[in-house]
Every structure is written in C-alpha cells, then in structure tokens.
Image (tube, rainbow, N blue to C red):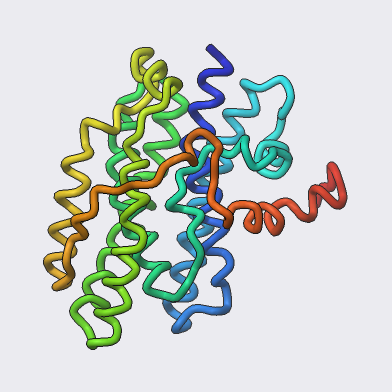
Length: 250
C-alpha cells in the first residue's frame, strides 16, 4: 500500500513540478514587470506544493528518501506528469493557455482532494486551495483579455487553445493506481468533474469571444511515464546540479 500511495502522490506532484519549472523559465522574460512577477509567484506556489507532496512521498519510499532525491534523481520514465504541463513557452499566449487549461482542472482536483481519507493529503489540499484559486483567476482573466483584445491577441490565444486542447483529456484518464486509491478513499475520481471542467472552460472561452475546439482526438502517455520530446530538455535543466554534484546541499 505504501508504494501505491507513493506512486499516486507522484501523479499529483509531478504536474506541479514540471509546470513550475516551465513558468520558472520565464523569470525576467515576461511581457511586463507585473506579469513577470505574477508568473514567477505562481511557479513558487506550485513548487511549494510540490515540496509538501514529495516530503510525504519520501516517507513511503525506501530508495528515494528525501524530497530532493525524488525531484532530481529519477529517470524520465519515472515522472508521471500529464503531457500538457511539459509543453513549451512558445509565446505568451501558449503560456497562458497551458496555465488556464491546467488551472481549471487543478482547482477542481484540490477541492475534491479535501475529501480524501488521507489526512496528510487533506492538509496539503487545505493549504493549497487559496493559491490554486488565485491561479485560476489569473489565467482566466488573461484568457478574456487576450481573446477579447486586439485581432492579433485573439488569433494567438485561439491558436494556442486549439493546439493544447489535445492534451486536456489526459487530465481525466484513470490509471490502475488511480482506481486503486479511489477505492481506498484516498484518491480523487476525476471522472466525476470532467463535465464540470469542460463547462467552465467553455463558459470562459465564450466570454473571451473564443471558439471551443471540437476535436475529439487526444494525446496521452505522460501518466504512464511516456512523454513528449520536450521532457528530456526540461529534466536536463532541472537535474543538472544534482546530477553533476551528487548529494549537494545548500
């Protein structure tokens, strides 16, 4: 059971780690100072949540016994994040679209995680709910600003939404480990709020004068450790110091 819970925690936390890393790439490169700081703060929020998850996971694993080892010393196939969060910062529209599509899911997930029978996960969720609520407001507001802005901003954010849409269904894919944790009362059955997710997405896109993509073709694989070509580059940056100087401490 410990290993099953460990794997489940990775399935939650790795999303935040990789998305936080992606947002961290923008530090000093945002379109404005205010937006740059906001994206950096969201990255820090996500990484703070990651630390709580990994500290708990480290208590359950015999090989990786610290949060740093879990974060930095795994191979690519051992990361269980969804494909959406590893997509690159092509431009600001892609950054916001990726954040928006994840934030709507993340808030719904955290709200449901508060009902887990695992009190440590409940405590993490209770602490994170205010942060993820802000993240959703931030990205949703930007979707509306860009969609209902200039012709150029409308076109760019629509293109980003269309391109990233193919990764949204994986958020609701239940792995055998997910199903086991749901039966144990610890996990979240994401299928229960799938319709709510897409309804909220559609409502905000309508407000932004954007079209909701109609494609039914979706990508998956990340939750089984099969990632896109972008993941290796992310890990080469993320893991460089620990791989070069093993067991380094500040």
